Length: 440
Image (cartoon, rainbow, N blue to C red; front, top):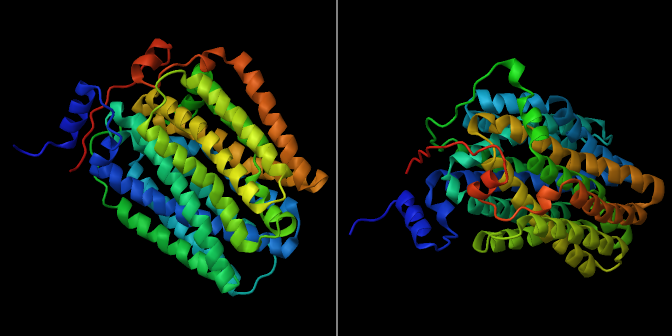
């Protein structure tokens, strides 16, 4: 008997009703893309740890940690529409290759600044603005590219695996970065390793072969179509705005250098352990969701997970023990992952391919607002009130947002299954029919 190809395997799994947790990995393009993405995130995460510790060592001001997020957020705020337009008008693989080369150059630029012995933070912020500009194009192209690698019925599992791999990189990256920083006594080995990861990622991405799938059309007048689409779709708007305000208010990660240096007395290794803890929790939850997807009551579970995110943020804020803090951050990452998987699945399956780049750009604007601008908000409030009150206020604010969103977006709370059929039944814009051409 001949060996079945990936499409036949997928079809047989659907026919028998059995869930194939590894279905996404039976597609060569998905394997290559996932490996490349792992290296990108790993490199960026270790670089981010080094930047945070380096800046706080120079200035000792929480506000400067907030400015790290602001420097990367502003380009996305101003140019998110352009990133989505480019993702829908140009070959997404080539866009991603250019972005990965840009990330590698940013690591080399930070390396040069450090080797030259520049003690001011201004040049570092200039590089961070450049990283933010690269993200304008990398994020929409990457998100819009993923659904083209697997059939629609496999995408929810692929989204969970993608999130799991992403968070595995957020675990490994900070751990490696912390060890390299502590061993070398400077960020130099961190920046060298990050650049190597990013260049290797570009090599893997160059091997992807996806043909005849990108259908984006429309001129410059269509660049804001994604924003209009999101505003008209209550489920998408509710899911991404809930994530925005929850992470914006509960973003304790930006203050980890303060906690590691002044509250927990843990040093750069401890900072690496703290930064890795949310990723570990998120990775385990993503693997759980890949094997046991959210089959029923997905909306209610999303709301509950965001509430748990707020509670665990409060626990982290009051902790004075390294291991309790790590446990709280572990649960922060695990609870956040439920929201991430639901949001990414809903956004991608409910959006036609020719619109995915622009809708993904809007989604990433919300995500960037919650992450990078959330870092700025945390830095400012910590400068005003101190790190601990800033984290506690953010956790309480997250709980208030969950209660408010359950009233404003009742349809989101009532979402049952995350399937194309269920989304159509919920009156989401129909999912575009796709033909997956996967180079085997």
